[in-house]
Length: 91
Image 1 (tube, helix red, strand yellow):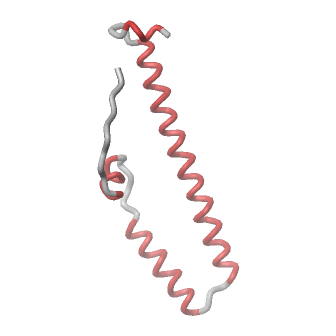
Image 2: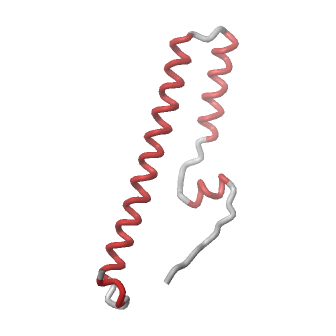
Image 3: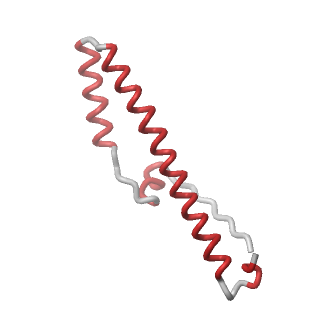
């Protein structure tokens, strides 16, 4: 049996579906502080540090998401193999 589900969701709805926290207040704070620093005169070391942390954090988040999906798929496959009601599950 094959089942397909199409979801038409906004980013906000997708965030809530996955139970992810709303980080928009933190994002607004970070943008405000960066803006203030730029207005004062941006230190090149500060910009490099911010860029590095954003890139590193993004990669780590993506890797964590991939591990989550992998774990779900692995658990689903194992559960399907053990399902006695499904005669095709003995592979």
